[in-house]
Length: 228
Image: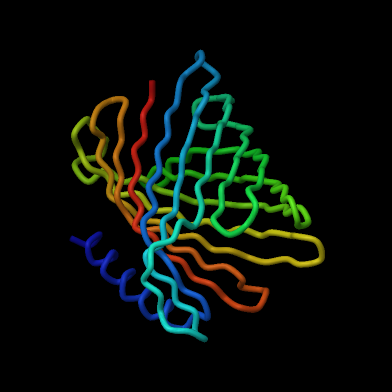
């Protein structure tokens, strides 16, 4: 019951914050990931993310409710286990955007799992470098804290539901400009089988915190995750 209360409070909070922004938009955010264990230490992952806008609000104009494709990301990762609770990975992303030229991104990260007060916490530190066709390259450092909580008992079993939430802070530099982005997600998931997870939730993002023209985005996110 308390998790439902948290969700309601978050929705009201988003409504109030979004109303104060210069640019607000959002819509649907489907994602899919397929992972394959190559051996006991290495795992390959392919991921597809796509953002489809259903509304766009600029304070200088009326809200537009026409559909638009915001972006689609194709990602590939190769990760290596450094123990039971530590994993490092390198990756590549190709982004297709509706209004800007497509771009490329290289990614390096380390992820650590921690058990604390009965919670399973995930820490991820990521570096990425984005290469644009007509702009200066962008370099970012990102830290994400996440937690996954079974909703039935203390361990997650097949056919059971879980609650997952994450908070990520991103600092980026491009040419002589820098900025901070904040991402908060919360979702309800289901362990369909030992190899399939499904999730439905909200993805809330705010950026241009340092630079002018603050922007807020909120997405209804649904994902499918398969391990081969």
